[in-house]
Amino acid sequence: MITSSTPDFTGSALPPVIGVVASPLLNPYQQKVLDEVSRQLNERGVITVLLSAGNDEELTVLIRQAAPLALRGLLLLPGSRVTDSCDLSVLEIDAEPELQADALRAGKVTAESLLAQEHQRFGFMQSQPGESAQKQGYTTTLQAAGRALNAELLAEGADREGGYQAMMHYLKKTRASERIQALFCESDLLAFGAMQAIRDFGQGAHLAVAGFGDSEEARSSTWHLTSWSPDIRQITGNAIDRWLGQQAENSPGEGQLKQRHSHFGKIVPGEMSACGCAFRH
Image 1 (spheres, rainbow, N blue to C red):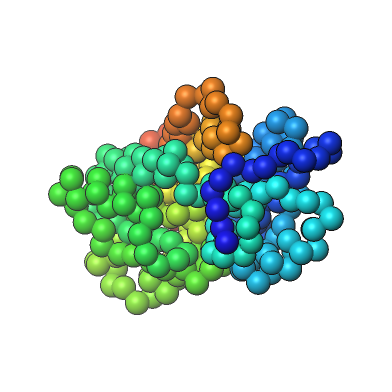
Image 2 (cartoon, one colour; image 1 turned 90 degrees about the horizontal axis):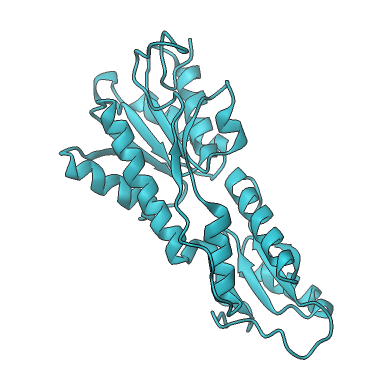
């Protein structure tokens, strides 16, 4: 049974071992979180073991195989879900209040940035149906400005191919006069896929796109992707301290929107003189 208690580090002279649970590490944001939690746990004298599991059954097998390591707990990376696999203490990063608050603010600030460009119709792309803090902050801010969430795009996968197919399907089925003008994606990977679909579709389609995670690729000249950059170091550090029963010394993490070009409208003076949105001339 999954618990949220503090891991028990007593009873052994050896350094404690924590299992870090990950679904397939396709998302650069997941990779950044993995790097940070591994570094911070190591700094606290904890050894980490990566357990790549997509469901409870796979995780149960991995935990059994790791029995000689005497795991003291499990830390779940974003995108990993476990319901009922073991008696170990669990830290689910996605569910931490600070990360949820950061995602809520990401939606709010991204919406404000897109509204400032005077876009009129808005969309949101995600890989799983349902509500999320990102979507909530985004939608609430649009509504407060008298706008609506005009399209919800559901990608079949959390990778760029899923984003590509979801956007291409939307462009093909929607009249040009009814299409959204701005899209917020739950991850940079989905944003890359959506932007590539817009470029491949052509036909004068212009969409502003924003992502989440601020991956290294987002900063490249290929995408110029505007993306939310979470303060991973502080958020994960505070969560780990609380989980290990230590006093969190850092203030709450506060991310920021890294504004580049992809969220602009058609006319952008300066570096991208013809167009600053997802369409590429």
